[in-house]
Image (cartoon, rainbow, N blue to C red):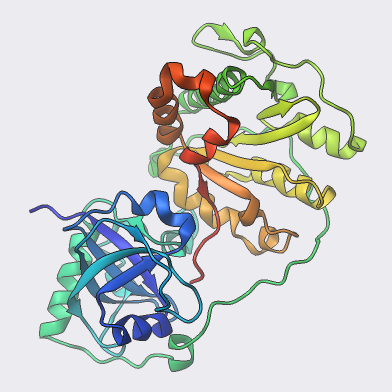
Length: 371
């Protein structure tokens, strides 16, 4: 039987609580429900201790996910749950430091920054790529037979999640649209291909909003673009002007957002399509919007290639954005290219009966589990 391998994050405290209650139920945050639904009986959950950065065990999944808020953990209900069996277990002192496997795991390859690998460990569940899950499982089995004791920081083992203070920070300077040179060594697509993907996603979002009966806006500097021979300007319900209820600086920020959905003068949703390696321009526009207008509530979405999900989550949760009020991660959701296309294809002709909230069925909140 071929297993799928998934990351399951624990602190030392939640690991001890998991074992105290029988080690037969694991759970995730409610915002992870859509991703958790992809986990099925027979899959493996690899348990990682965030405080000390070690792999401590493997769980075999025994059920599909279900909802249950019966108290098992003190600090969070983790209501999206699975029946599990603890099949391999190490002790904290014999658990495997993640850095011991850095030469074998793909998450350490082609890093944009030395700590870029940590993005994978910011939320669970997360699906392991390639052979990573098998490599970790085999390392755990080997450590059970030949344990090596290593000291660990008990304070970090028992720590509770940190809480960021929320306070308004100064505005961030917003760059004009930048072009990032292709980086062949990291597998980045040629710039022309990335631009084509960006135009496709922008066009799909504009057409989707229009089909939902909303007015749509395309970024001021993208008005003359087209996709597959169809100019953006020919999409029904596209607006040439935006409502002017904000100050000049806010309006300038809003005008540069890739796609807006509007209902009358109200902005229903804002989308930034990020195809470049940096992923900064859209985030800076969103953060500036929050900083300048902290009392408005606009649904924010970052649309990016599937393989940049971890990069998006890492950047959205940077301290600069976490200190906004409210934090950017609480407002911003991630939509992968594949989920957007699949969602649109699945609804087909039923689009006329859908409400704008449909978009949340293919989106994932960018909040991460504390590590």
